[in-house]
Length: 609
Image (cartoon, rainbow, N blue to C red):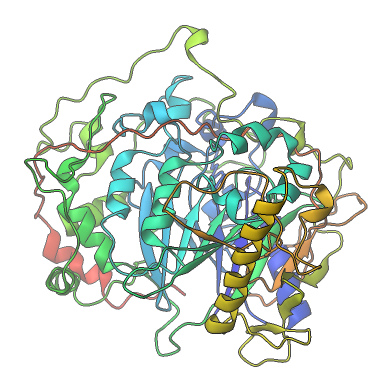
């Protein structure tokens, strides 16, 4: 299965799809699914711009509205998580996920879906400690405070992810899990982003809940964005029950010229399973059993834990999954029930509204809530769900500008977003090169002649990345060499030493090791570049932007697009990782069985393509 991964989207769908089509044509392959790691910006009209937390100069419609209106259709199935620059009013219509346009699926606050047997989990937003234990109280119209807090990660979604007991193949997030820099080439990262040094040294760069989920779920891949830099890492988790698991982490840049913003990789899947986007039975069971924990107020709530008087373990049994599948008629394929819920931008400039939209109940959310007997927050806010017993409080009003740190989450709000090449066209030329990484003196790259598209050695030591025994032996040797090196050398390492172990001696890291676990195995070769295949590189020289070519559904590849070396002047402020609060909360479950059986048919015999 060919999976394309995009960093920050920033509404540039035309350019991203054109890049994919170019790669497909150039490499004679077909991308099956596109994953986008946030800042999607599903702006339908000028009213949506008022709900997006960006400075006025960045309030741009871009191209999503064309896909929302049906003028264009996404040529590849697209799945995305939310970031910190979103049309939050639209995304809040779909708290549990749903179609924002034909063939474009939003993961909601948190979600797990399946595609061809690959389990994809996604957590939207970024971490901010002061809002972590609050409920999802925000709703339009937003004030300056709620416009920002609406995209902050909450403890409820993290608690739900921690109930997952079956393997996750891919995890998507916007911000990085805290501490991931300890597992990659941190010196190279700091050369390009020197302003990260203080937060890396204090281990505050990234999301604390993300770090916890990384070590609890141990997904095979973790993709992220937010910090506008390409960064790869390799995490070898603590052994459990004699089983060793690893995570390949990759963060990508945003869609701009001379940026590394897109990667395509091949992941094995069950060829007997259809390439359809499906709901995940385990996740749906968790949503049902934890619905009573939903908090829609600005007050803090805490998730239950060991020693509490209420249930705290919501792990799903096989019987739970079988029962849920029966409720859905045995077919969890996500029905294509997209419909417009707001006016479409009119290209003649006469948009019907420039004001902040109000609360809207989305039929997709109504359908899923009916099937699962769970709560639709927007129905509660509008007084249309009498089963929710908590008193709904109004969002706090913030009139004092000193109470709002308008820059705390604004990684993108700087001149870094402006193409320094004038009207450079991201799609002007493409250099498609293969990525490689090194372990000791063995360089690995994509073996393009291999029918299974696996990664094998191109040097004398014929070691495949799938050869766990030999790879483990290399890593154990590196660990021993590192310990010897640490005992013999000072605390500082020169920039020349951080690239690899070319002389056969281990390179010492300049930052502290992760605090998670007693003895995490860190891949000393910090230049590990994850299992990547095709890279879209932006042009080195800017060219005037020409007209955009229309993209037809499933078109195998026409136009071009993007990526070269990341600019060392990428200005960004990292997310603030404050100490995570503990979990627990309670509120009665909500039962909504009306229409349930009638809706089963909508989840049966539906095809996405």
